[in-house]
Length: 150
Image (cartoon, rainbow, N blue to C red; front, side, top):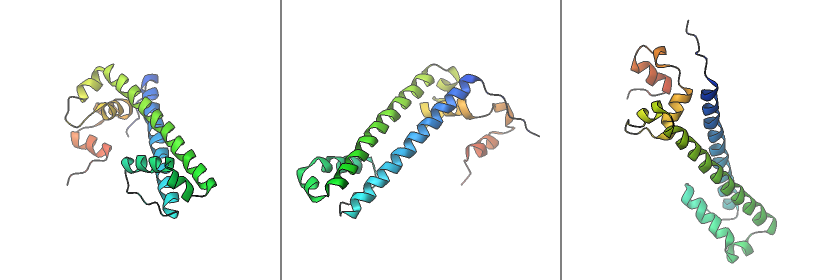
């Protein structure tokens, strides 16, 4: 039987930072999809991606776009773009907090020396992963992460 290791308050707080960041990113995705979907109903189609969302937000500011949409729709679309900007700012603040935590922890700094591991992944591993002694092989840790061989 495997027992779950008790996490320190600091580890729990770091895990909370990641869960909050994940929530903010999911809310951004919801808003982007809603914005694209509502604009598509009025014939304004944009490709996926953050660049296209910025383009749609710029289109909402143009006079031609504002006059082609009903006022209630334009108001709600502007509300969504404002909410999205606020969530982006919150996500950026959370990223700064994660980077700050990464600089302050020796284990995280060592993990960031691995190619492809940045501050977010390194801090997440330190905060959320069980102790390394829990795994008998590196393969077991990779499976815990959700990685599978090709």
